[in-house]
Image 1 (spheres, helix red, strand yellow):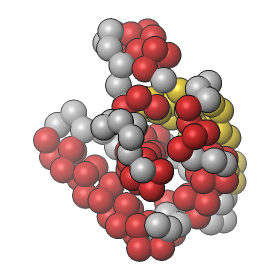
Image 2 (cartoon, one colour):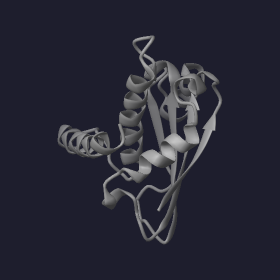
Image 3 (cartoon, one colour):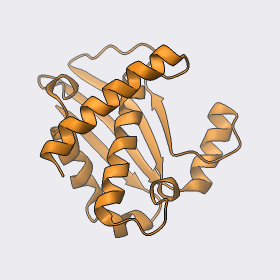
Image 4 (cartoon, helix red, strand yellow):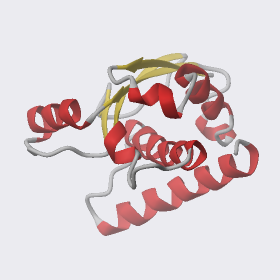
Length: 153
């Protein structure tokens, strides 16, 4: 079972997703079984932030002086899911999620779901530096999203 700790440093998130903690914890319950770690206690944190803060983190940890949609910080270099595991942290920028401006709440939630899946896969060790890894990660993202989309939205 996965539990997610949600932290928000931007009040705009509440306008698009009323109960962010409930949203993400419900969302993870609709992931395919292999990603739910049913007989284990797995946790992660999500920081719902903005372009200013994510730009600072991107500069500090990746030496890229620009905002981005999502950052993932795995707790370990090599993923080894034990009975009790902390996967790491995901930070998502509100401004990136709300492009174009005035997305409906449903469109916004779908976009956040896709980027959350992307960040989640990074916590599990996936990357997209090489083209073959990009294709593999993209297939996994699409598979998880389609699985969720048929049940959650």
